[in-house]
Image 1 (cartoon, one colour):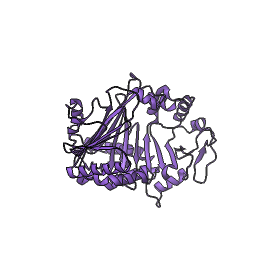
Image 2 (cartoon, rainbow, N blue to C red):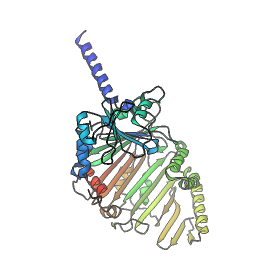
Image 3 (cartoon, rainbow, N blue to C red):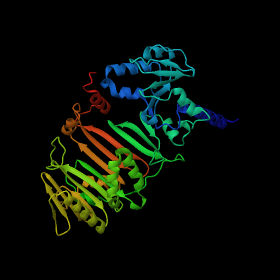
Image 4 (cartoon, rainbow, N blue to C red):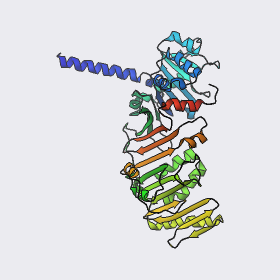
Length: 443
């Protein structure tokens, strides 16, 4: 055996060992779970610093003496009824200090810890711990392990193509959500920390374990920015490829999230949505360009533009006119077919402008667009930017002493959302968010 064969054999052995270490926990998690998250609790705790309440910090510290917190998995099943955190036990003697004295082994060979109200219920077997994080659990760890490893189960999450590979990846936090009634694809999201910003990377995995491409979108046309109010606090645009949009899937998603009422509204406007054959956009700005700390229709200027044929756009405007008339609201119709509604502080305008069905609360005028926004939006499949000033965030969250900046982008296969905090100096983002969450809870 020559030196190259020795090196190759050693490399194969090491890779196999690494794979075995990475899938050891995943092998015990059933593939039919609703969602599985991987969490590096040690890193998360470090990033949160002293912002964590003392009792939580102490509990995590005690658990860290007995469990490898760098590789924890959170399983969500039965519609949220079953929630378990599982990891590897590194020091069995330290578990009692963290969770209390164990009971005798049950018929499945598990030892039970805690569950007395002061510490969570936990089970251990074969060097693995299962901690109950929900109060309505219907399945025991033994039942889940049987589903994952037994011949009558559906196998483990480790064997799900693509999704298992994602969950093997070392990361601070990430989650894989199973397909549902409107998609059979796994949704994978990884949370990363870059330059004091939280970055969420999202992609979909098909049944073959491949990252699914984005469909139904085409590059954005930035012409909508010619009519956008400035400075914009919120901008969203998406290029719609009408022949490849899964309108039924979108409808199912809306019905699942919002219920029958939202689905009914979606159904009523679906004929017009199907006529969008290019960019749809929404832009909003404070009415006088200043920041008020309040957001409503009187302090915000907004414009919605959807590219479609003139006939369909005129029909949509006529439908709106008839609906407004049934409500008994005063409406003026312009010679160009536009509508103007004035009712109290409400001002609404609907028109067909430069190939776009346009709805706004001001009369749009063509202006020179922001070069910065043009550069940001140009060529994107979909892009959203939201900036909320400190005063406005403070009205929603009393403990918040920062503004929020969110940027979201759809790519060919991956979608990213970046969250930054503004007006708060160099305060670490996780510490600021944790303080907000636990404010007023006497920690």
